[in-house]
Image (cartoon, rainbow over all chains, first blue to last red; front, top):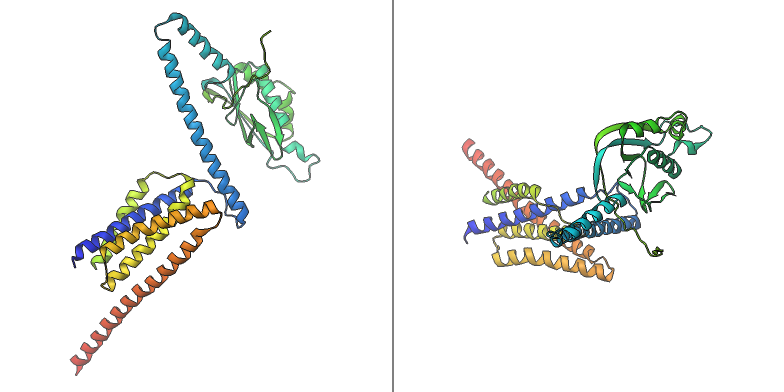
Length: 238
Length: 128
C-alpha cells in the first residue's frame, strides 16, 4: 500500500490532536480555577460560576456593542439638525453627570488595605479590617474635596450606589469587592489631598489603627462607567 | 522510521499552531477534552494497525472524526440527562489506548530482541 499516504494521514491526525490539546490546556489555564478542590459539589458549583460569568461577559459585550450602534444612530439622526444636536449634547452631558460614561482626568488614587501585621492579641480585631463604613467615610471625604467621579475597585460610585457589608467582603452596586480597595477620584489633586490629610480626620484614625493607606497623585486616571441601570419607577414629575 | 518522523513532525507543527490558536469558551472545554481523548485513542489505534499491516485509511479517518463527534454528542446527552456518560467514553477510550500501547510496545521489544539475537549469532559465527 502507498506508505506515504499512511504516514501523511497519521501526521495530520497527530497535528489535529496536538492543536486540540494546546487549545484545551490554554483554555483551562486561562480560567482561573484557584486551587484544586477534591469536593465534587464544590467543583460543580465553580463550573457553574465560570459558565455564568462567561454568559454575563458575553451579554455585557453585546450590550456595549448595541450601545455603540445606538450612539451612532443618534449621531446620524442629529447630524443636520441644530436643535437635535443640542439635545444630544445635553444628553451626553447628563450621562456624564450621572456616571454613565467612562471618564478620565487628573486626581488621586487611594489604596486601602487591611492591617496585615496586626497582632492576634489586639483588643479590637475589627479595627484591623477595612469595613463598609470606612469606605463610606472615605467616599464622603472625597466628595467633600470636590471629587467629580469616584470608583472603588472599578465600581463607579453614583447617586444610587450603596456600600454595604457582606460578610468578609463589601458590596458596592450589588457587586462583591474585597480588600485591597483601590479608590480612584477625579478632581483637584490639591483639594482632595488636602481633605484627605486633614488632621485628626477619619483617615487619620484608620491609619492609627494600622490600616494600610497610600495616597497617590495621578495625572491621568480612568474611571469606568456605572454598569447598572438607574431605575426610576416611583419618580413622578411634580 | 517514517512513522516516527510523521508523528513527530505532526506534533511539532500542531504545537506551533496550537500555541497561536485562540482559546475557546470554558463551556465547550469539556467537550473538547472528551474529543481529545477519543482522537488520542484513534491515533494509537492507527499506529497499531500500521504496525500490524492492517491499516485502512477509511476506517482510520472515519474513526478519528466519528469517535470524537460521537463522544461529544454523548457528553452533551449526558449533560441533558444529568448522567456522566462521558465517564463511560473515557473508560472505553483509555482502556483501548492501553491495549494498543501494549501491542505497540510488544512489537518494538520483539524487534529489538530479534536484532540483538541476530547480532549475537553473527558474533558466534565469527568466533567460530
